[in-house]
Image 1 (cartoon, rainbow, N blue to C red):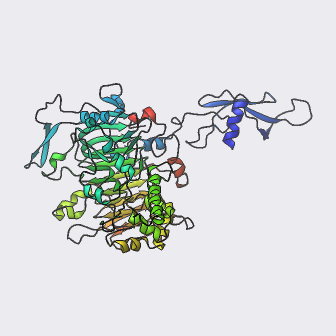
Image 2: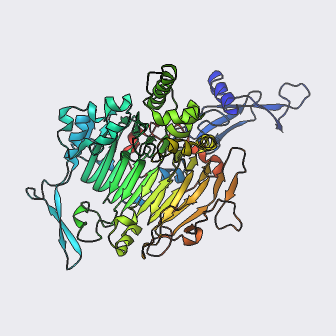
Image 3: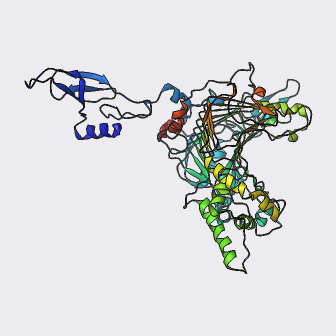
Length: 623
């Protein structure tokens, strides 16, 4: 209200605000025999100051600095002057907006390419595929077993003058439908860049009842391989649908201010004999799959619900041995880091115009038709089993359809490695999550096998999912679907931090809500040398299970802290350690007060997610 009054008065009175002031009495200018009370007027505002006078006397004529309530307050408390939001930012917030965490000092300033031939604007999928192709480097790694090193040289047919990519910035100017069924022959002609994301899952497509969203669009995977020094971004927060990205042998690659969505399909079948319905393991759809890469930065992006997971990371140590050295990114130094900053992992939307609501409404209509027409067979037997048992449309929508089933899987499973000694290379994983929101996740915030994940200034609010999960458990949802077919699944976990195989997760200045198992370890491998144990450390974090439960704030170092623990004995704070040469934290953080964190992440100018006001500043990496 104070801000509204200040701004209104500034407009109506020519940047003036009248306020009686009894603590600074003046003389008796009107000869009334009574002491004068100053009525302050604020005028002539510039960027830094305003003038203070009195409407009733000449005793007050001063200049004073504008008054603001913190960096996100943009209107002066006294005169209503509106300041530029970016100029108002503190040094701490500017550092948070920079390429920080595990990619600090590893990402180029891409503003150098603006106005050059290395800057490419794209408005179609065909143009995007061409730009990615032009960004590729053509080189090979020559391995020397004697020195355990490699030398990078131009690939056959290329020279030092032409083996590098010619595109370093791709600006996406329009929303793009990446669905494979919607692509032109021109877009599909280079299968090394864009491919059918269902090419190995045709049997599942035939067995499952696929939605109209899928049958019309399909799914694509776009591959970025052998690419160094590339930013893909949008000034206006363009939306990419029905597609994910696979990054292999890339270094210094950035995605900024892009929305990703529509990468999910309700899993169901008209046949009671279809196997593994509800497992969500038939399709490998994820927004990003990253392997054998150096430093990658995903910033100010919005992610909708995905089928198999949001982001997967594996095989970070491309210098481990001669067998994988050929995958080394050009110019990489042997290190790696993935930094996720200011991202909104929003799960699924219940917007009635959105694809999930329309998809689930069509399923409900089919179910209702099977009830009213005895000759009609419901095409969604999994859904029918839940509804027949008493689950409502809303229970299924908010308990199964909109929550994000799997979040972030960081690291290969141990059984993928031939020898236990090789698994030590997973300890090189380095992923940082900064200033991010995770809404209604079921699992993996994150799950890591080896290495370190560092979370700070993050909010994981799974309250809505937890409420409807509780209802589905009470209805016996898991046993209900298994009674139809013993291979069917209705796993509704409530997990956040998972760590195993000597991995460690640090969460600093984070808020967790609606998560039953705050920490867990489900990786079990009895082979000697695989080191099942994982560790975690919480510093100044808050935790609340149900909306009526206590909010606890503290750290795992506090004696008798109230954070939930895991009773398996395989994950605990005592197993946490930094996988750094000196055993110390890899970088410093800038944290916000917990009671203001959610307001910061919701800031309309620079908050979490795509579509804010960073605009031309997105090409910079330091602020």
